[in-house]
Length: 169
Image (cartoon, rainbow, N blue to C red; front, side, top):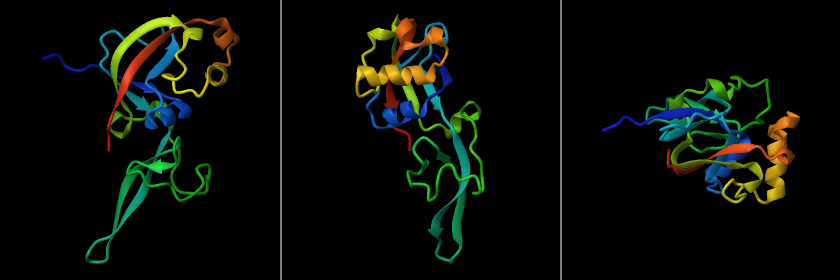
């Protein structure tokens, strides 16, 4: 049996929210950026922080406190509970860790690759890409790609990854 090949990929906050809401089943990156040969799984990397989290008290009255990752894209802890303060509040303990430093064990997005192909950017299936319209997808693409040579109007080749989300709790 062949071992599963996986890669970590930084996802935007919009992609994260769309994937978790199951509105997105495809990712697009500029052609040549992703090395997808024989990749079976993508684990999503996102901005996070390790926070102390309480699960209440045990029968002796001691508080059950453990380190639990919190995710900036959704403002929630891994257990799904909302964070109780403003995400940008820098006076709170802990700090946001950049997505590129996220280890796989903290990822909540495990994407099983179903198919990979190249196409022109403007051939996008905007619903599968998690957008509400073609125009919104184009606007979001341009926000993420400020280099004029990579903008929507240039219509470059992109690599499309069709995936399904593994349920991770």
